[in-house]
Image (cartoon, rainbow, N blue to C red; front, side, top):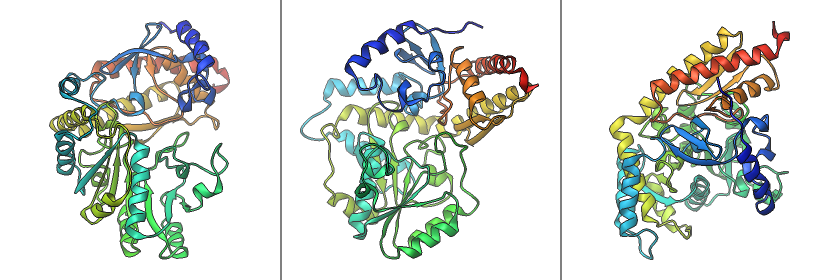
Length: 418
């Protein structure tokens, strides 16, 4: 099978280093160490369509990162993009909001369990920070319970002391608990009685570089009970998992009621909009918070979001992605076993995490992922992967062919494995 090279990507990266910090900033940059070995990965895309992305060297990839989540229907979905273009012809970023904002809010309230209102922004982190402010406005309290390894954005309060630019004051109100440990959660609440405004968590444990964990049996029912008894706002960060587990929201998928729910990624199939939705009792507090942005009333993403959510509902998108993910992950696991590797799959099949367990430092796994990427299947070794509705049975079959060949290359490179 042909393997890819990336000379144009390398030339562009050299240019970028002259004018952009780190060339490509954030976790997507090769300097962050998430692309190992760096030589196996492209750096720049030229176009995308459906389940595929092409790099600047003309190489095509089946993209299971889905732009880190926003691609849910397929890149360039014709219905979504047609709705966006139609709105662009009418107006986009205007002084006054358009009716599309109302229609989008109505649609989300009709779709998501526990959504009595919606507030729109641009990034997932906008909504998690707003959730924090709403909870504090409603309760008059300062502290927040967070769970180790859960990612809620890049605002100072979401980061850890010791990270560049973060001071002790930024995280002084954070209380950290281990995921799934009810005893630790109860002790934290008891030790901070009457001071906790919010408990924020992802619907299941999906950190980077770590096996994902679904909620333990009874976990969310007990968390909901503890929050209710102690006047704590329960907020779910559904930015990553939203609409990939259940169209009604991940809280509905796991059978509990959240007070606030944060959405972004899959909300508009790549058009830039996010939403915080909440229960009626927090509506007044949400309206009292001073929170805005230059482009938050932009109508084109609202139109795209309406088309996306409607299509996800019509196609029963979450269930279809779960089914596609099961087929793919079962095949990947079997491919590994055929070559003598234990490929552990964790999390939900529409947003899974995987790693080869045969070594403790991910070297074998990073090598296998890199061999897949060089053959046109874009995985990453540090993050959960994403399913989208444009993936076909033929794509899955080709992915499994690539996976088999990549496992064979890793096995041949390591005769010490026997």
